[in-house]
Image 1 (tube, rainbow, N blue to C red):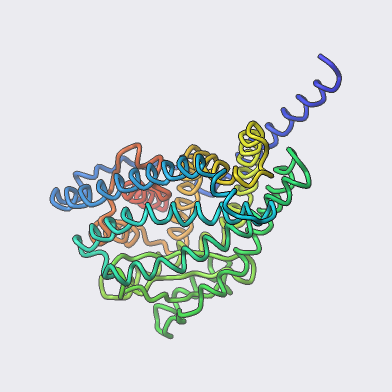
Image 2 (tube, rainbow, N blue to C red):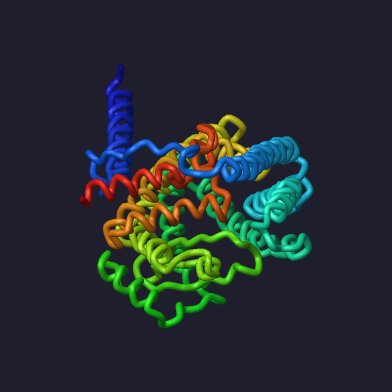
Length: 403
């Protein structure tokens, strides 16, 4: 083996080792390693009728996800074959032509998957979780579609320019660049998402929530109430932003009388846990770790057909990225579940209220029809949170440890 090959393979091995070390560090959490979580039997915790209802509701949604995934991949295969014809129809420069091919592909894929979303809406309306009528729902899809097209235009412009400039090494530049752009979006978007939301009312519950934020070391994190009760009965909360833009959004459905004050405080403490443990920052680090090999695979796949700089290969590149996303989904969900469990643990430590935690998790099944113990394939491919029985087990483990 020549010295050049030895150096090449040594570099690849070093990069692989560095990748796994970084991934291992990013999966570390503050949940005690010796924590004993008791077994929780869903059949013993929930009424049979509720288990049947939640299973039936979520099983249809799962198969709709399978259908949507299949339709998306099939559409991308079709557009991959049509790529040369679509590109030939535009008398434009290389980059502009690639953008148009990508736009046509995006619009076509969106159109063929729209019926799947409509069926999901019908199913949610049937179970009383969705309130939107179909016309309103269709109109609500346009902002998302426009943002997809705009985002794809920016991404393709960058990728096609880099492919033309750096050849087969474009992925080495693109991966960190896209991570930086993602960080900028994560920093800026929360300010836009706050439009139309409101601050919580100055109540005893809010005062308690602010104290929980201080207890978790994130006392300056704003809370916004998002109005969704005219669209759904589901209850949800989420954390977004980094640095000064980090904030917690809580859906107004948590305040419709179904949840106790202590349960709402747990929800807020959970979201503060995400901020305190730097989960958004870790997500950006994962973005870099996963984008590097993903772009490398895209480069290898498109090089066999002439390289990404060819605009007619844009649908093929999107197909490869979709397949990569499908393959790494179990990993992404596993990481997300670890962070969500850590946020649960942080909330338990802040509130010292495992009883309300159990009650809250039970209500996710009662009101949102979350199946307490889903099938394994769904757990791997769809569930980015611990299951309801896992979350109940964590609350009970905390209770036993705190005694």
